[in-house]
Amino acid sequence: MNLNLKAADQNTYDAIVIGTGISGGWAAKELCEKGLKTLVLERGRMVKHLEDYPTMNLKPWEIKYGDRLTPREIKEDYPVQSQTEYAVLQSTKHFFVKDSEHPYNQVKPFTWTRGYHVGGRSLTWARWSFRLSDIDLEANAREGIGVDWPLRYHDLEPWYDYVESYIGVSGRKDGLKQLPDGKFLPPWEMNCIEQHLEQKIAENYSDRILTLGRTSNITQSVGGRSKCMARNLCRRGCPYGAYFSSNAVTLPVAEATGNMTLRPHSIVHSIIYDKDKKKATGVRIVDAESNETIEYYAKIIFCCASTLGTTSILMNSVSDAFPNGLGNSSGELGHNLMDHHFRIGANGIYDGFADQYYKGRRPTGVIVPRFQNIDKKTTRKDYLRGFSNYGGGSREGFWRSGEEAAFAFGEDFKQSLVTPGPWNFNFNAFGECLPNHDNKVYLDHENTDKWGQPILSIDMKFRENELAMRPEMMSSSAEMLEGCRF
Amino acid sequence: MGTARMGKDPKSSVLNRWNQLHEVPNVFVTDGSCMASSSWQNPSLTYMALTARACNYAVDQMKKQNL
Image 1 (cartoon, rainbow over the protein chains, first blue to last red):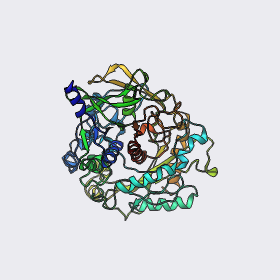
Image 2 (cartoon, rainbow over the protein chains, first blue to last red):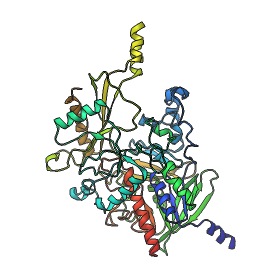
Image 3 (tube, each protein chain N blue to C red):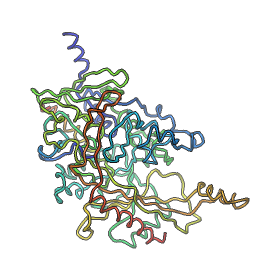
Image 4 (cartoon, one colour):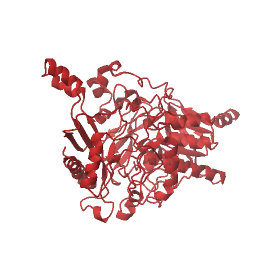
């Protein structure tokens, strides 16, 4: 009896945070700084800033297979996540789970990108950092879609100020009501083709602008982290800590308080509910290495395990009081799954500026922020909400010459190798997805993973409104480039 | 995003305006599952802001002996 009490005491904290990604790292920092003894649980392995970034300083010729996954790796280990094309590479694959080790059911095709390790996807995210506006937060209520957000921009504004100032976000103040300005570091610079496009769009349109991306790649030193060196190798982990990740920014601060206990290899099975106290009392975990089941207790619990991670845990936390998942009397848990829709746009080649180039590899791009359904003038009949056109301009390089070189000889061949190709510009539009009750996930208790946990079934598709805006996502991209003589 | 959405009414949403489970107030959810709509913006900065806001609220409520 005494022994049990002692064990319970040892496993008791003020707070438990589940997950170490973007949200979990912030919860750990905030709660530890406020003096709470905090247990931070991560289902995957430890990744320490700098020492666990094995590829961060490798040269291109030191990486196998031109940095690409082999056909065997794609087939056996990454059949799903390899579809993202840009993210899972030889130099980054250790920051993504193997699809084969973490199965889920695609009731309809759904590409689920995951990184199970300390820092989670904060190491591999795209770093674009935008605020929501009241146009976004009021839209559900205005249109009778889903449920109204229970807060507005003025509730979030001081907290956007707080986190932006802390992490460092570079950007340009554009004064757009659909994309509120923030506490920005100086923006990155546009190259000549982007400046040209910016000017032409300003001449050709009154409803839109081209501006710099707002990104967590810092253009000045912030909180002891050096400014970004424009290597654009972010997803390997940054030797300068020059973009926001939990590993570089929030977790070291939490650690320094002395209040954090970080426990990797801790798969949360469920949250423990006490129906008499009407409170959660703790969590039950499975140690990923020993398969041991352990309980930890705390006064408050922060779920930051990612959208589908947290949802799975809540759905698996069943009791007499909550037979359908913790806090799920509404029946909405697991429903209304949303994702952005993209991979549509246009690419153009520009004949000119042959004597100009650029320095470094800027780790962000330019953007035409949403210009649809902002006000009466921009209201569309065929769809609600809207999209933004993300882009970037560059000169084609050696690879072009390499292809041409197959047909070149002598002097022409040498010349083609040392001459950059023409300027090109690529737009990729990124669109909003409406909440829909029928886009859902649920647990498959018949099939379990190697730790005996039920696997997730994902039943989600893009519907009428998303599909209705896609033609314009493409045509607007092409039209802006054509109007600029691409 | 969206599979434990915030809302005003416990009958149609999972979380309240402080990212608390309506029915279990000492459990907070501050990742993408809380989103009531997706918007076009990359959402991560919003997760950071909502998390910091919810942590501030949670500790405040603990001090007032409400949690």
